[in-house]
Image 1 (cartoon, one colour):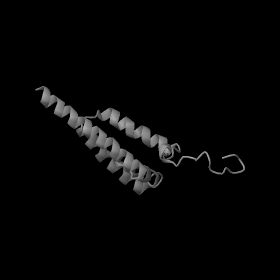
Image 2 (cartoon, rainbow, N blue to C red):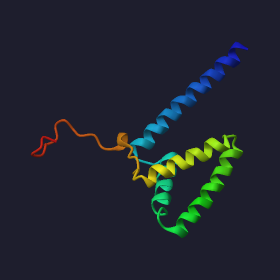
Image 3 (cartoon, rainbow, N blue to C red):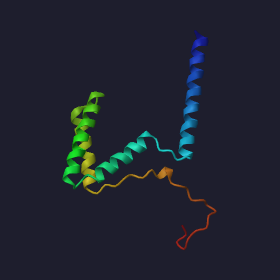
Image 4 (spheres, rainbow, N blue to C red):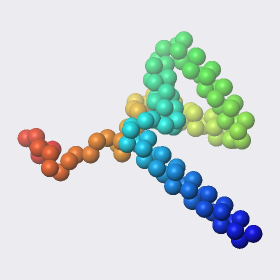
Amino acid sequence: MAGRRQSREERLRRQREYQAGYRKRMKEDKVPDRDVIAQAFLHHAVVNSLGKPKREQRLYRVLEEVEALLVGMGFDPVKTRQAFNGLLDRYEDGWTFQRKVHLLPRLDEDAPKDDDGR
């Protein structure tokens, strides 16, 4: 049994290493992952719907369907609705798309700086 456990642990270690390398390659190649695409999609849908009655109505229908999916996955229905409402409230108050600052290019210390020292 010790040999079996060791091989499982070795397999899991290799999987972790592979996954870490994969994430690093995706970041270096600037390939958006599922979560970044979903975030951009939601931002686009909300910003382009708020204040436009027909679009808002369609957005709310889609959000109701997404809410049903989340509840079907086991999320609390009341808290899910509160999460959606909180998100929409923030957008209505002028909340903007949250940039992934860790994806922005880093300034090279040796690069020439402008008049402001940047």
